[in-house]
Length: 151
Image (cartoon, rainbow, N blue to C red; front, side, top):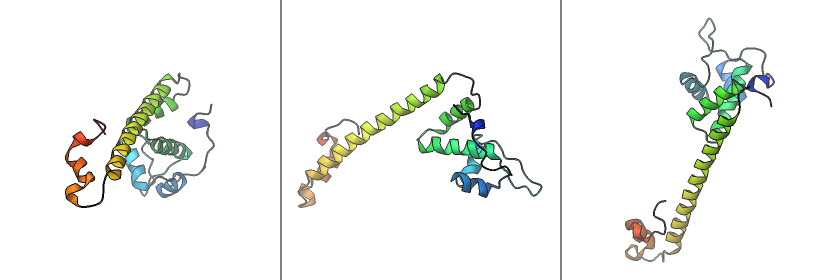
């Protein structure tokens, strides 16, 4: 399995922050933020104080972006990056992080399904007559009309 350092170089020459943003699809302020919190190493500076990036930065930023797209939190990404930087270790921790993340996604989906069911039932029960007999207002005013305790 390839490590981050095994992936092909996308640019042999140093990149500006703008070029890095363009290659990775990550906005410049986000790149600066990732540097400030240590997900992306601080970039070397030119004599005119401009940041420069190499292909390793491109790979790392693409990794971060993909992990964020999959919903991983910053701290989990920090741990996954540390694992990616040490490819000889077992992947049990990466698997555990992904399984924990998956459980969180499944929990959110279940809550969203319950929420959808409640709102659907509320809307379908509305006769659209007057507010005094509006099922939407009635349900919102009294949680006892809901099917689920939590949503």
